Length: 144
Image (tube, one colour):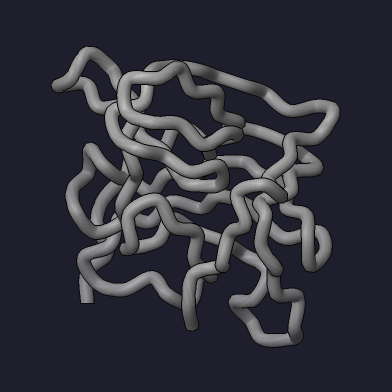
């Protein structure tokens, strides 16, 4: 399986979205998954499922593209979120559930989780374009 391909200009929040904000600690594109770096004045950086527990502590998904040092708004809960990529809804057991990717900032299908990844569920697809975004973090890295 592979990460969903995000088109930053197609990322849209729904009417009931819950938002947060901060300062970008890197160049960030709309649709990328974020964590708050506590060691750097709580700046927002790209989350990663297999780098460390800190980088897997997801706070939300970027709503706009910005350069490092710029203000950034993110969505952390949304029952009608458009992530900007095509989602799968096939009959396969793990299709439709999306997690933090092992590629920094990426969104992957749950079947991509592997040993050493910190599991973070981002949400469940409602259609091929919409997801019910509700971040759920696992307690520890997966083991074999």
